[in-house]
Length: 312
Image (cartoon, rainbow, N blue to C red):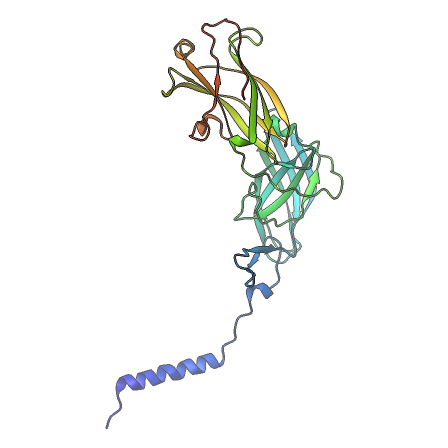
């Protein structure tokens, strides 16, 4: 009686699989391989539920020959050499962190993108812009790199270099400065506003708004002011203009007098309601249900005496 062709074929396949697997070698776990600069190994602790990932860099990149220059328009140029002591290519983002007098991070931003071959070094020159508000509060600067798939302004960013600290003048910073945590996202509730005053003349000439804003949170917080004019309560805004910005340490305050330039001057006569808002994104995002703004008294005529409102 002849053999079943399907059974014969199945036996051949099983036999070949046995021969091939006899010579197979199981790959070593990824975590046992050496970890070089810019290469991140993520491991999960199976014994702790939701432990998350842990980044480990055994051979971080190193900064040297750092130079810094800032010009009047807020531009900042940073030159530096990066050395890669590992064997794998290091690539990612170069970050510049500003730190205040209390050792708190003001902000961190990407200034460049780098690739350094294993065992080598390369020199870079990057340019960025930092506004006067933040720069004038900085007492030290910290350079570092992160993995290519993480962001400088995210405190969870995986750092792939040794930090390099310097002063805003470009001189070396004291040794041992820690890299602080970045502040959480700011909210309108982080600020308390008082002393709102609208002037339609005087010094400076033209309409201006004066107010004091205080950071009542436990972390650094930044936001902008927004003034909106309405023809009546509940209507769409006739005008909205950004009026000042602030970046403050906990418990710090700032008093500002900011010009108010409506796009159409006739709106001064048409507006019956003015409201002042604080929001991290200024007029773009302010005015939601949880941020009704503060009323500002509007003088009846241009050139009248100042109107004053103390925000509670």
